[in-house]
Amino acid sequence: MKLYHGNSNRISELYKEQMRNDVDFGAGIYLTEEERMAVKKACYKEASVVRTYELDMCGLKVKELSMDEEWLLYIMKNRTDNKAGYFAFNDREYDVIIGPAVDEKIFKRLGVNLTCQP
Image (cartoon, rainbow, N blue to C red; front, side, top):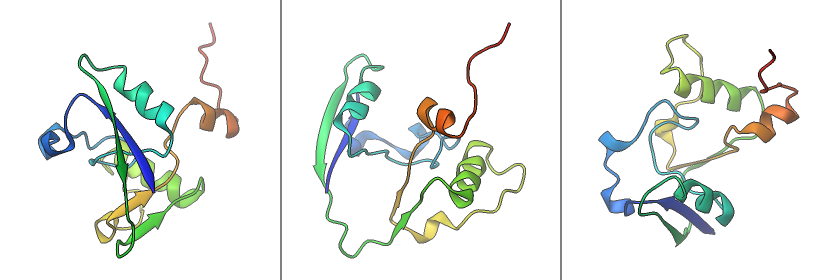
């Protein structure tokens, strides 16, 4: 599987203390199958680069999420540091977690209006 990562650091330089916990899938290295998404992410950095990786998932324990209640609870748990006690699966049991990240398109599909109303 071909994956992309956009950033200004090498993967080996991404230390745990630099990773944020309050994002969709928690602390970790985010990769995408869509090169344009990696380019978009890299554009926010001063000295950015998009790297390409080939991932052999044979032997890895993979959790695939789709836009359902489990996915939503997992994102809410990560974004809130689980302060509200959202129950989601134990992500430490998996090597790879795959699923859609939250963006404007997903909110539109879910019928959520993100525009400010005066």
